[in-house]
Amino acid sequence: MARTCLRCGGDLPAWCSPSVSYCPECRKLIHNEVMKKQYAEWLKRQENKQEARDRAYCSVCIYHGGEYGNNLCDYILHTGKMRGCPPGDGCERRRTR
Image 1 (tube, rainbow, N blue to C red):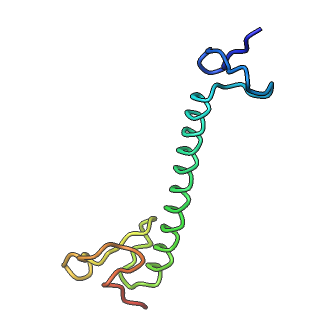
Image 2 (image 1 turned 180 degrees about the vertical axis):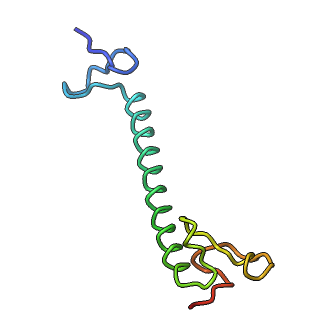
């Protein structure tokens, strides 16, 4: 009796163990899907870490607009000029209180 792949319905090779449920091609596809999902989750965790670093870096700045809810920079409101650098960790316009 031939066993079939649970994903594509094709026949499994005769040499594979009874615990194998997917053909080699489907196993590669499943592995790639899992790896993509894990990478996306890792990227999200890294973004959250960067947001936390940016929030901590900006919280002591005199231009920090914390009363509006998010991590906003009020540099342009105080000076009338654009900041000219990205906000957060490494901002060149940061002035501490």
